Length: 269
Image 1 (cartoon, rainbow, N blue to C red):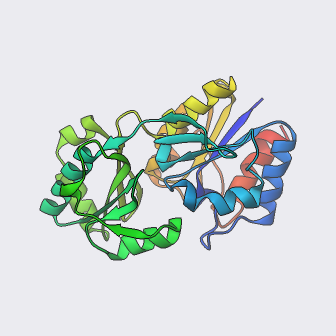
Image 2 (image 1 turned 135 degrees about the vertical axis):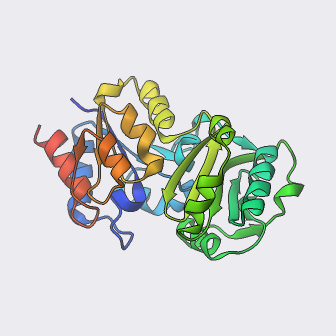
């Protein structure tokens, strides 16, 4: 029996219009009524997830959330931290310097300062709107070396970002967790942070084993949790990489993919 369902948000739980369908809402509610824990796992900060947590009723003392691609795992009601593995200002400065050399934009999330960026670009504005956080203009070279940074992102249009990725030094992948969450977002986190370690930490906290976990996602930043889970599920709109990794592929996010997974493996099992 599955006891924990980890759901990515953008491209998975949410429709292309950023909504949760009534059927998906009903399936999540029914799973929770059977005692299954449902956790939203996103690259977003908590601020960008709050409205959806409230919509689904995931705001009680037994509800949890996984933010920043697993860099932060916390209880929703009082924001008690279960796990946190972050970057430093030194890391952010180094990544921003490399981004500048490669000709792509960059922004990041600081515990102290929120959404930070050296300049306002198209995709930083998009991020600001998506997560409901203002942009704070910060020269990353001036960040204190011990500044607590959730994640740093190289951001730019496709195919510029793809060309940039091809030029990244191999040692960067040894130093950080590097995931592509969308065609225009490349994300850098602490080497110990990803959605897989985040879901694993929550499962351990709840006394749940990996084979009792379902993880559903669509993009590169979902890879680790799909590999970890007893049942890794790819959305119909997922990348080919994610579909190859997953044990099961459901329908698209505009065709009730999440609802179908819950109905098949939890409600009708």
